[in-house]
Amino acid sequence: MDVARIRADFPILRRSFHGHPLVYLDSAATSQKPTAVLDAEGQFYSEHNANVHRGVYALSVEATDAYEGARERVARFLHAEDASEVIFVRGTTEALNLVATSLGESVLHRGDRVVTTVMEHHSNIVPWQMLRESKGIALDFVDIDVDGRLRMEDLERCLSQKPKVVTVSHASNVLGTVNPVREIADRAHAAGALVVVDAAQSAPHRPIDVRGLGADLLAFSGHKTLGPMGIGVLWGRRQLLARMPPAMGGGEMIREVHQDRVEYREAPARFEAGTPNVGGAIALSAALDYLEHIGWEEIADHERTLLDYSAQQARERFGERLRIYGPPESRDRQGIQAFALEGVHPHDVATLLDADGIAVRAGHHCCQPLMERLGIPALTRSSPYIYNDQSDIDRLYDGLEKVAKLFA
Ligand SMILES: Cc1ncc(COP(=O)(O)O)c(C=O)c1O
Image 1 (cartoon, rainbow, N blue to C red):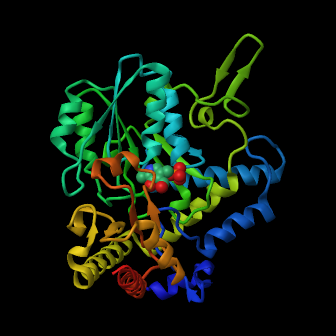
Image 2: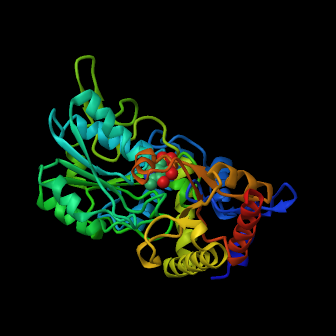
């Protein structure tokens, strides 16, 4: 993979901070955007902007075609059966809230159980906690082992209580763990549960096969996948979407409205009330083109090389003084590395690295239940992507050596 060529496509990477060229290692929070994506969004607004599904005039037809074309593009990326299974939303958070609200009005009743995991992002915990408050459902958490993998025997314990829904992240935004979603889905289905997958961290790194994974519903965010902020996707099995009520009402999602009754349209329209983020959807489609053009195999190989190099640097330079959380083998995980540097608070680590132009994140990473489970308040996280190379990892560890020296 030609990282230098890729980097040239990302104008923001030319910036410097505090006199140092930017080393951006926070792609799990949001990825940077290549010119192709920025241009696709700009071109929509400068040449094709009109509201979709409403006008008979040529410009509106153009906008509608481009929007529906983006839906088809996403459907191909997800290996969906049909583009009507793709719902555009703001991001993973909105998708998971939509799912919880809609299932809360249909499938889930007082006393029913939902299974999530301790490694989930707050966006795959809080919507279910809100249902616990409003509908009286019960929420169970699957535990992890010492290496940060889900404990399958604990999943069995949860499944023995016959939950209606099992919801799990494809990849953890802290541990980097890639969960065995297919196996989880098979077991959950055998127990009679629906399977919801949070693919926010996996979609940027691998093509998603919704059917291969055995998902019933799956969410991801455009902005972590080279796309713009404010666009994301909820995919759902067609037969299931047909049974799910809308979570939001308004224009575009109705077939008929009268004073005394309302009739909703089929999916995806039923779940897309109001004017959608058309420019965002088109730019997301350009982002998927860009990633596919590089090649998923190349992206995975590059990520593994950086991960192994980073782990080796950590070992050689710090030994026991730097602990990386999550599975030790790179084949079970993604490139995210959340770590603790002995004797230094993660916020100090991130602040001092920033002084050298290195952008990493510190905190609980929207995973407070996981932090509690690990018995730590916070971690520093490095999350490289396609535009990072070994020199960025070198700068990270050079910076960390300076931090360690300062606190020694
Ligand atoms: C695993 C995971 N799920 C969900 C989200 C929420 O995504 P968004 O903020 O784009 O809605 C994130 C974002 O960090 C995440 O890492």
